Length: 332
Image (tube, rainbow, N blue to C red):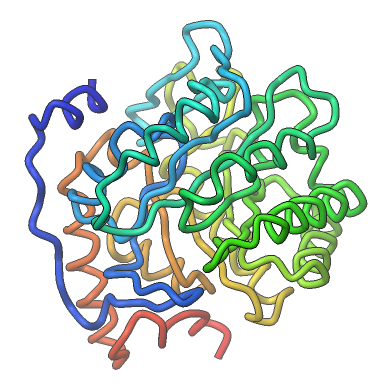
């Protein structure tokens, strides 16, 4: 319903919060603010500019697979209202890369902001790298950044690609495929990781990311864990948990990656963000950019500008003239 309302123009654009404290420059690109829409909402690139018009500094579409995919059987999304959380087992339902490429190609010539493309693999594909290369070849020319998603819990075997050897193989292959396109400028290449990682997993991922010299990490996807304090009757539904219960564990993983990479790689923090204080905590924990999605279910699109206004207040309170100055402040 939200996608239809946005496509039809029923949800008016919102005047963005414009303040120098929010402006961020990364990968040679200027972001009007560091708050972005996480992948999963606009799977088929139907409303990226309409969501940018709600005040986001950037939008990530997908996950996109080479072939159209129906996803898992219904029901597959559950609102845990008493926990301000969501459980989903969507299964990369999307229209396929060719359809999405046509939509991205038809975007306005002067876009409102940056749009990243999150890539996944089809459920039945055995060699995952083949699917990611297909996605890069088809969509990279329309993307302001590319995300290799190996962290969704809803595609069998996908998270196993986060192991050291398969991850190095995958990222090297993706980077080579992107280089062969010789795009100018080439979109940055990022990796999206899970929150359910061992200390060894995190060490391996950080080392591979630095060795391959990818451009960033997104921490984190949804969790398969179920905290003991969840109250809702649907808490044990299979799938990935997002929303408020994910904030603390995802922020811990974010901080771990900032420490393990010594701040040498751009981090995007996502998981449980619903107010300016939480966005600010992600930044202080090492995030140069912050994403949200589940909080929109409970607070609506006006949340974006509210977070940006609150973020400005926190930055000024602590003597930062710009959000980039606060990145990793908890480690200084």
